[in-house]
Image (cartoon, rainbow, N blue to C red; front, side):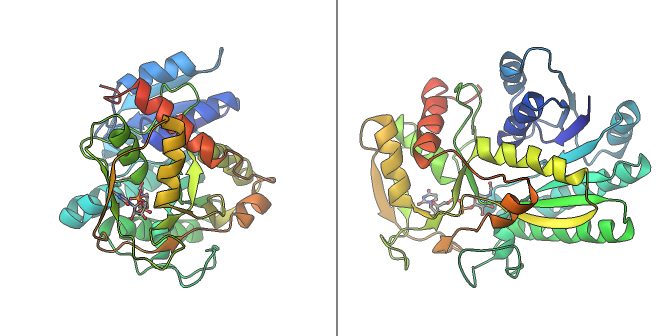
Length: 341
Ligand code: WQD
């Protein structure tokens, strides 16, 4: 059975990727320092894993060279899916050095230990944020990158460059830079989902926390953008589709070398008001909301064409609807008002 290391595998993205790996016949090893995730998620994953599947967890920081060397000495990894990293945009503006140190050093230590143990397949959790403000829409992978508006985005962009240079120097490596658009939703069981610590940064947990009364209302940040209803437009993709995209990318790694950047999105733009409306249908009542000022650095519209993913990953495409994204996110939030606590 092929063994896949998932760094940050106890996080929102990582945990859904782990489940998809198990359903697809892989063995998964999670390495996570639980800085931004809860050990309870491991209990939930054990309750959800397919019969006969196997995963294990190592609590460690990927910046810890000794711990990572021990991990690679113990396991013969077929590939690595690298999700570990700080990811709060606003926090990155306030704490740039922490973001650059953690997100870049983590990738460098991981690549060093992969090289030492001759592990040559890597999927990197990148982000649409590397595109900066769109020059055109929909965004394809040839769109210029850079012009990021925050240190978090720059760490994604810099990590992509590091990985391109590593793959150039090691031609047997195969690297996929998966550029996530806006992952939302949750596993259909409602047992795992997005559990941001403290006040959420992203719109979906903000909406669901306002729906259960944990937040007094949704502050719709900006309604004067050049969009159909004046609110921000994004490409929301169900976390289950994002997870299946990772498994499809793994298959591609087995037969190719070099580096490919690939968008993971639906190709459809949804406004904040449309998203809120979708959640109100799932919740069954209106959710308090107020218009407020734009967030600094926010852009009006950002959505992709997922044609390259469809072409490279054996016909992959996102299949879950916006209604499912809202219903599944709501099921998770309503069943877990305090997240994993
Ligand atoms: C979506 C829309 C806001 C909060 C960022 C990162 C990306 C990825 C996802 C980490 C926008 C509006 C938001 C609020 C609002 N990174 N909004 N009220 O900014 O597209 O992307 O998060 O996981 O790399 O760049 O996502 O969910 O923060 O915002 O109206 O309180 O919701 O203006 O239009 P974003 P988001």
